[in-house]
Image (spheres, rainbow, N blue to C red):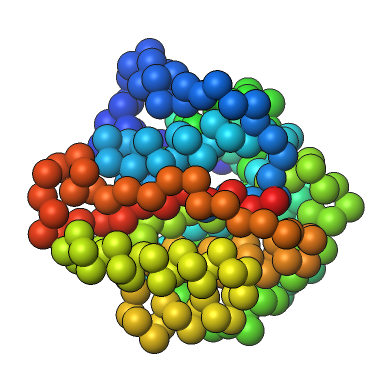
Length: 267
């Protein structure tokens, strides 16, 4: 089964030549990329969040396997859905699903279920793929789409991810796809997102989860981000770097209702 591009032509260009050219411009960096345990990358249209995603991807190497955790925006499918076989297609080519890695995860974590329906319309995972394809043409993916889980479930998934990744450290990257605050004023978005980012970079997943809930921060991928943080801590992470933060207002000029975007690297 091939999961076709659903959002090409909307969130990003459907023309492979134009898309490649756009990404080449965005991914320009003089820095030498380094290994990472995981990253957080935004998932809006490239015109809005592409700069943040690109500067994050530009700083890291992409290993042969990539686990991508995304939020479930459309309420379809299982609560924790793994697209466990076949491949995904973008205008830049086809990416195989790492079926053996999916199977290992499913066997290791009862919360995760094989389910393609959750991924059928989801944009937040799809928009990450062209960035990765521009970095390497030799990788496979484990797509995981998550609804609103509780803290214990996030910890369980994170521990399972770490168990699977640990024997293959530096061969597997974990990505959490997330935007930050939604439709707040610029000032409010910056304040709320600062709280979220400070709690996340303190490397305390419980505090981060509680901060999001306490201040009702509309960070759509905070569940994937929490799972990633639990996994990263189990894998020995010692540093989280906020690479770049901006809002949609900096592109649209409308600062009354913005969406925040942040790129983070965990190492």
